[in-house]
Image 1 (cartoon, one colour):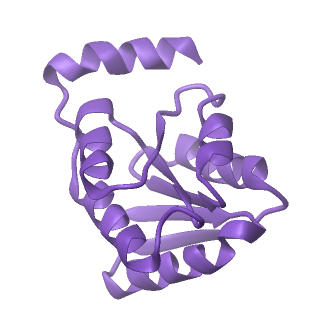
Image 2 (tube, helix red, strand yellow):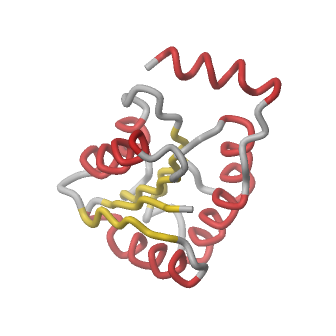
Length: 140
């Protein structure tokens, strides 16, 4: 699986740690690097995910909120602002989230790597959840 990552300046250090973790775990990483701001970081990842449906994305800014709001404006993108492992797993399993947005001022390195692990370990369950995913996709 390819994982697309990016950050703004506030998220750069945590993004570097996440890239190292992903490489250690054997993931193919498409690192979009440090972008001018959280909006640009989110858009860099979201647009790459649109053209690569099997990929997943991770964006890091100071609090995760800015990149989350930007990502949700991209048609067909389901993103989540995440700060714990269970939410990371469930947003992928129940909401078919393709991108998670993390805050470097919220998560330490260990927790961030655990969040990434759980997000990437989950797979979309489909079934009854598809109704909600279809609704989300129609909104943007």
